[in-house]
Length: 391
Ligand SMILES: Cc1cc2nc3c(=O)[nH]c(=O)nc-3n(C[C@H](O)[C@H](O)[C@H](O)COP(=O)(O)OP(=O)(O)OC[C@H]3O[C@@H](n4cnc5c(N)ncnc54)[C@H](O)[C@@H]3O)c2cc1C
Image (cartoon, rainbow, N blue to C red; front, side, top):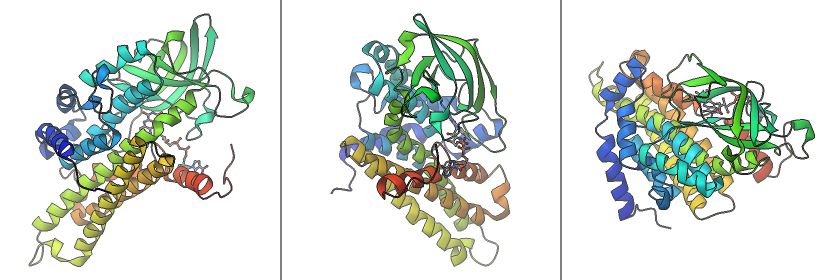
């Protein structure tokens, strides 16, 4: 097994770093303070074709595999640009990978080039107030009416709606009580987020997040049947298909937030002197940073392993992707936590940017899939233990 990066990987890293290195700590600080979108780096990444990294060449993508893509996302994190990874998951995975796996030729031709070449933004409309992690319980309903569907319902926590070019909306097309298997009867729709039948309002957050997130109220939204992505009634299985990729790219967001906090914590521990030596000379400061580094690096290996398994069609890719998500989120959180201690009182100041990393890293333990649900999956499906919860 070869753990060296190939020459191609090194070239990719250099290509991304050339862009990302123009957007350092001061740039991100200004983005945090003003609460604006980092549009400049999104535009540059789009021009460089990086939102199309794992998308097919015939539709304008770079045709890279998931391992290559992980290397690209790691390179963004190495250059302080971890926040761009959220947009990557939205556009490239929710949009691009869903289209690659389920789209018709017409849909691929229409939608993939604008992601790959222009960084078109996709939002995912899955979560609902009364369903939470139990996706089978969503109640937003799409009623067939001639060659259209008429959709009514409510969604919650839908990131990026305001900037999205497209919304991938998941709705029931058969009521829960009428399906044999609870995962049956859901369908994916490609929807115009600006359709007047969708009202949305931003959810005020008590913590920093790059992508603002929204409540959606959908009333009599008419969607042509051509806008179904994949098969009617099979939507949740298709979403599950995309989730192995999403597990990995979303894991990198929490991992990257923690790694950023760690890098800044190490620098602070070298610079800050309140006794006769830098605080990093004290083991109580040094050891948590060193421990965080070991866990960040172990998680990096697990993320690459999950990507490799996906690329090689391994049967246990689901297990490995879940483990990667779990370990990366934990490692990110522990690194951010260590950095909070190192920064002492300064960790509370917006100027340091540590609390933002800390909050995001904590939250990436819960979303898009929570640690508890990952452990449920491993307990039941990997270890063969009884299912520990209801339907
Ligand atoms: C900032 C932000 C952005 C988001 N963006 C999007 C988006 O773009 N699109 C989208 O569709 N969704 C989005 N979400 C939703 C996100 O994916 C969900 O919040 C997440 O999946 C958790 O669901 P929930 O909050 O409803 O938790 P719940 O389902 O209410 O669960 C609450 C807690 O109970 C635990 N729990 C629940 N069931 C079990 C069980 N059986 N066993 C053990 N523990 C259990 C969970 O792990 C969790 O810790 C976003 C959320 C946030 C906060």
